[in-house]
Length: 275
Image (cartoon, rainbow, N blue to C red):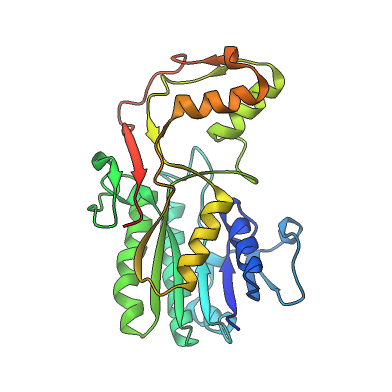
């Protein structure tokens, strides 16, 4: 039976991935930040937990020990604090820590390595994003993710490690940070307060985090290598999404479109395609 090492299992995406792995009956070794075990739920007797003060500061030698007996690594962890992560220098720490993890995985003879990237790696002016859309990251976050993808796509196959890089699009669901759009809308509707929005004309590819996790795990367990778009392929405007949420409360009147200026650098369309 495949044993999986999972990073980021206490986070928004990582916890959904953990649940998807458990649904497949895969024993999982979770590497988490020290003191965050209370954020893990429904562990089975086949799951393990390893704590570290900072997994991105650990050496390749440390990772070699941690990866011993592991068949596949699913690396979800990354710095992702809303309002800060896009431009943060901590992305460089995540990049170097990811490369150390990969080195340890190779030394431990892990057979498959799955990393998690972002649609922001692409040239977003293309709008519809395919696997062959050129990369053109515009922030330190996107550049660090793209850098990890490029480095690992050359390094891991040369060491006989199968490599998959799943690029996430726009996700929502449990454990989502309260500062993000969808939790904000729910908070405002529940409190009966106006939700100040941009024009809402942006077209996005939204997906439930659990659907995305199941898709990522399915790709991880398959034979695909290289990049994979973890997306729905559906097109919705931000306005349509906001109205769907407001309708759950019967409060479209609380949506204040145009109260916030549109970001002139925000792409008009970001929609993923699986091929």
